Image 1 (cartoon, rainbow, N blue to C red):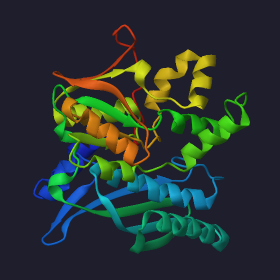
Image 2: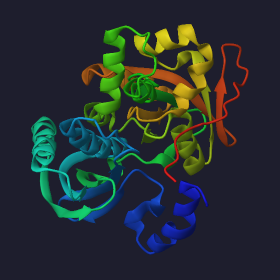
Image 3: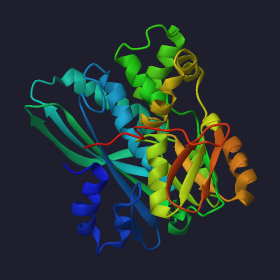
Length: 324
């Protein structure tokens, strides 16, 4: 079986060849032009019970994560949330109590992010739950972010901290029991309730050359930018920002470091900007109250290199999550 991105390129991308708004299926969302309004930016993500969330995860957190991973895609394009469509494929035995809690979670985040439900579908299944959400955003096309704009000499930045999503899943699976309760709780929260970086994205408009959200893993998503932009990306391992909980894990087992960069589920914003825009990026980070760290640079060539303090390449077996 071919991999996820090979499958998209081989079978699905040709279906979008005559639709320029699909952007060759190479970005986080499509851009639909609307004269007088700007551009509608659309994205869709699906979560499968037992694959993208655990069966005993609280339904309100499942709902909020489903919405937020889509909002993260809008942030990666520099778009403002507008509305969403929802598709629920639920097991026949799933009761109304679960659905009521799920909808309450959506309501909470609708109020936080100023977004509302526009329509969708609901069906039943004899298998696991399958939840799909299509988020719609708005933006001025010339100000939207793309994966394809990174230039040689640009700097590479990332928001927040990396590796907490993967560690949070491990904690939910009863691993790392030796961590302090506060650290375990913080990691689980990062896995179950990611923070879409919409405020940062809005502050960065006009300063970003390329962007993507970290959903598949830092190294894998950097690889998507490198491939789409036709450049090489060099990441300084020591500069990658880590939470106190992640640092505790690495203090016990330093060999975990590459897996933190390939685990995914962080939903941080990974982006490039020119050297001249460095101060503007730092100002945007401060204005949006979002931590941002410079972690690397863009060079000629292809692929992604993870470097140690001496500038030597660190070998990585698994660079990220794949969905198929």
